Image 1: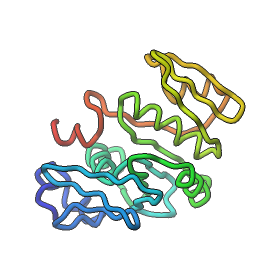
Image 2 (image 1 turned 90 degrees about the vertical axis):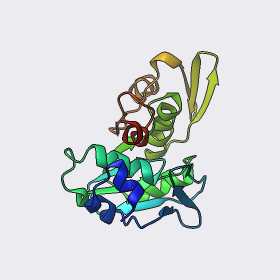
Image 3 (image 1 turned 45 degrees about the vertical axis):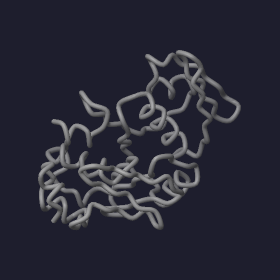
Image 4 (image 1 turned 180 degrees about the horizontal axis):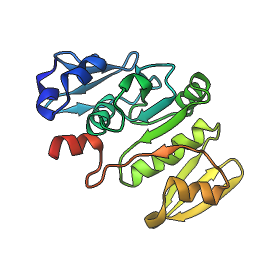
Length: 195
């Protein structure tokens, strides 16, 4: 087991389920995520990190393996059977190629997006949800508004009101994809680290 993850409160059974070793290192197929007490390096890659049951009915998508571990640690009571889940980490910058691969490989699944609670996390929710439905997006920040272009459709939303739901309503798109956000901090990993 990993002493650092144990100190953070990650149960040994969960560490074993995620195949955590002495070193918290996660392979994205050529690129690696590294987590130490001093550093959390998440790759920008066209590959993905995968964990869990590939035939599970629910797929949790996040930006890093450590965020997936933190999410499941903090929500163990909601998911008493981790084998009923599949986890995917996209790295720092989800690409359309990654999203189309997920869409093809995980058809008819329930998706839960676990990205940060700030503006960047919300915009990532929008990009990933639209991509999982086969739509590419172009997102631009214009002062206190965000312009989101999807095919020929464009919508302008105030930064303070932006959410996946607001985008779906403005774009006339219904994704059926759920998002989970930490309460008082930016990420679930921060919540695990700093309480």
